[in-house]
Image (cartoon, rainbow, N blue to C red; front, side, top):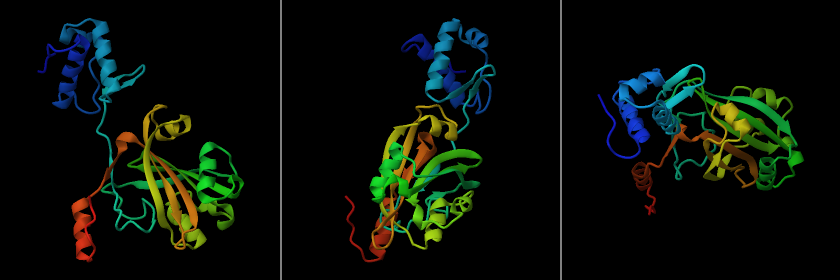
Length: 267
């Protein structure tokens, strides 16, 4: 049975010992940890030290404290692997319409949660700048992507209102929004640009993702355009940090490029 190591503050020694019990399966995922008095007895520690150890494990994401219920070992994270292919991902068909880029996971769907017209928040103004239109001319569609019944990402899409047919909002209730927009306006969308950055979850995103406000989110945003280069759709996707893994498969793409006669420009 793992025991505290004589290294560092006592509460960290106990935290590492509890983590080892989690790692070895003595405390399996989803199981309830022993109570504070029980842990005190097992480790021969006072209650304050055990409480500090539990708080450290909570900060590390190893456990989940449910107030009034108990402390539980966190279950493994369901992480979506997203292939990012700069050579072939030209057409913007939407992340959920084909097995790639989100693959290997069942029960994936996108649900519309709110549609608004002519808003004037900071993201709305940013969308207006990228689409070269006033905010009053835009329709915003907010959605949640759900994987295996768990919220995975929140998304906001902006498109010129005059491009959308009457009743479009109802048609996006439970389908891929990018595909729905492209079909509604009759334009084959292409990637213009995409960027990746990190932000903290605001109150609305935290509620929709079922995470704490301030949690780290991966922000993927960009513009999709018509074949002639006109900006059509601005997308702002926020993914809970631990729920995604972006993978660049260089050897596969290099081989595909060589097979097609292209030059290897990787650096």
